[in-house]
Amino acid sequence: MTGLPDTWKLLALACEIAGVAGYLLGSIPFGVLITRALGLGDVQKIGSGNIGATNVLRTGNKWAAALTLVMDAAKGAAAVLAGQLLGGDVAAAVGGFAAFLGHLYPVWLDFKGGKGMATFLGVALAVFWPVGIMAVLTWLAVALLWRTSSLSSLIAAAATPIYLAFWQEYLFAVLMFALALLIFATHEANIKRLRAGTEPKIGNTGTA
Image 1 (cartoon, helix red, strand yellow):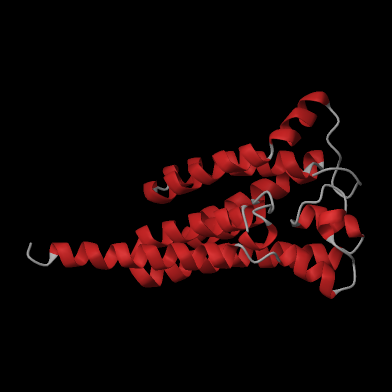
Image 2 (cartoon, one colour):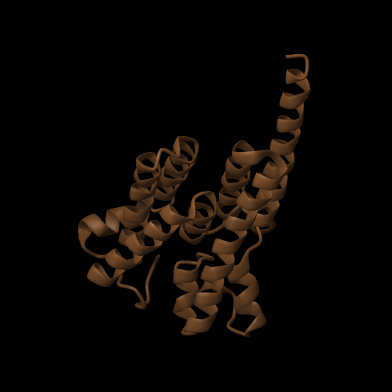
């Protein structure tokens, strides 16, 4: 028991480092950087102005959108894995949550970021890869059926914590539930358009 306070101090330090590093990693605006590097203009002035892959696709460059998707997912996964190395599951959850917040509210863009689905999937894959794959397959299945990115994101986000609870990964289920709530918050306008039947299909111009 004498070593318990030191153990908690080390865990707290690991969580602090994972949180700061996760936020900074998550705040890297790959959508902005990739579109500028490829001479596609400022993605913040295209379509919805969102920096995520769905809006990058509106530049007409599928490779730029795919690369944005991969990199936004990778930064979420990297934050989780770094946290895991620093302090186990708790620090991994902190790192993943911080990376997600960094993507939503990047300090470099006046806290105006993306809607978070790619980063959500990256976090899910890193915390428990079987569930991460199930989340990706859920997104793809809904996208193939209804060709609506926002609906795919909402259903996959809602299903992921349920999948994790089924696998008895309760800590990560709580993490992904919190991220799912934020996904629903960032998609508030999309939800209204879905109800009105005016949400654009994947690949169409419009808001996202």
